Image 1 (cartoon, helix red, strand yellow):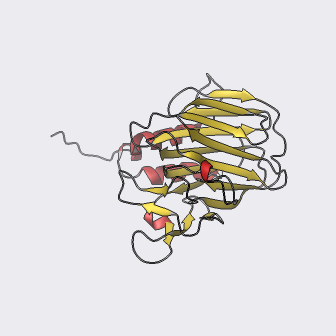
Image 2 (image 1 turned 90 degrees about the vertical axis):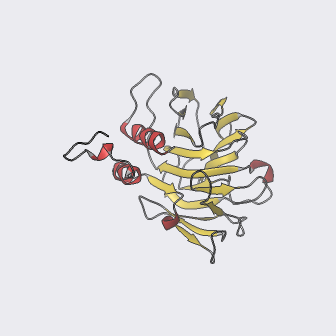
Image 3 (image 1 turned 30 degrees about the vertical axis):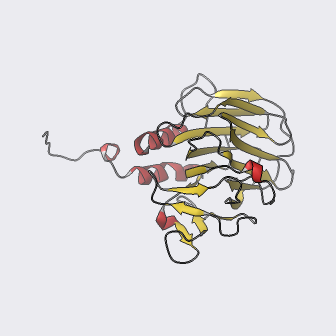
Length: 256
């Protein structure tokens, strides 16, 4: 056994990954929802009780059940990794009001698992004033990032989901969309996105508050959602990774 005396740097110690990530995210204004028991308020006793509130790790934001989610949201603590569980054709989504004052420019990261590669709606951002909506969708092995108005979109192969949790990151600006899957290259698309102005409401595991959209709901486990309310955290294709993107990549690598 190799032994050594002295203090190791924090980055060399296991078990402190969440604290390090929160410390790096807070200065950027990022809102981080992580499926952890201490951040969840259950509606009743027992491990299978519905999740009534999901609190951010880095801010005062709270994710509440979307209007069609009538006690369907569950915390899967007994899986390979703790996660919020979403069920096909069942409204299990959560919503975060006023997550950004300007929905035209934001970034988002998700760490999730969907073994069938058919998780359907992963997350969306609804622009209250403009009426447009941006969403991430996984269906039949294809990952899609686009606005409902059809001005901008990226389609690529969905993660393989061979190593438990996968990471996807997306950045939207008025005329540019960037997407990255895992440690792969950044994909970029151009377009003139309109009607994404005004305050934004974040939806997790669903597209909006409407009921009757069961075909957009899939089997899905989400452990982490990180939302940056302004700016792009994904650098242009071929450029060096940004500090915020690197922080998420490192956290995913050490906790997967």
